[in-house]
Length: 350
Ligand code: FES
Image: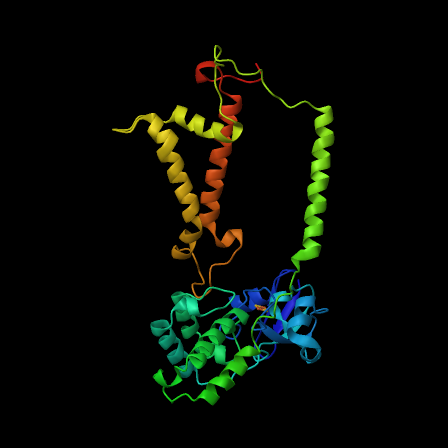
């Protein structure tokens, strides 16, 4: 069992593979290690100084910390899974560059922005919401100490940029009156923490070459396939003969099945329910799914962090979407293969 020694404080025997950040957070170092990127290796607010035994740094650590900090022993605890005895110091998140601003000023400016700035005017690559502003305001102390990730600073930069461009500085009731020079200084500090610009991808000619090549390859493949395999067409339709059962194309046969199994409810006939009401409700729910999750917060442990994009961060979205997809597929399979004359049940392999 590897031993983790937190210098001058405690030591633990841990199972091989235990994540160092997780261990530190579970053992009262939560406040010192805000881990604002949630263990993604992007923020440096989980940095600790390793004295012995962490192995080689990975690419995230090299990118975030740089050679100089690594040489001084700094490592991202979220990126270290213990495999041998290790000795660390937990000095907090000093690796992140500190920003010399009174946190009260940040809170005042955010409060002003929440009241007076139309949020759509705060242009960032991540949406700025009232909840996000509230969260930033709560974490002002951490932010000025350099904690916080690039998304936080992007929002703060947008707010300060707005007030500076719109010449609103004097309107803001801060503890000390802000000056234009101060705001510029603050913007400069935030700018250092903005997300790196994403690499530009040029659509023409590179992307078009790939798309057209694939398109023509697909077309050629289908052409060759059609030479050897006939399309499964039925006999030409005649007005004197109606097939039994008359099935919709496969992508609508699920609705046809829904129609067949829907009951009459009060004034609504089964046709109205299965053909109009139920499909409309399904589609409406599917449209609403992306808006549901952010408002249902009760299962989230860390309410200060925005809802993540992973499946496990969005259980309601995932469950609803999976339910409707499975339902649609099951209805289509039943309608297509398990219904015969008079839309009665049949077993296709008998
Ligand atoms: S938690 Fe952000 S780098 Fe480790």
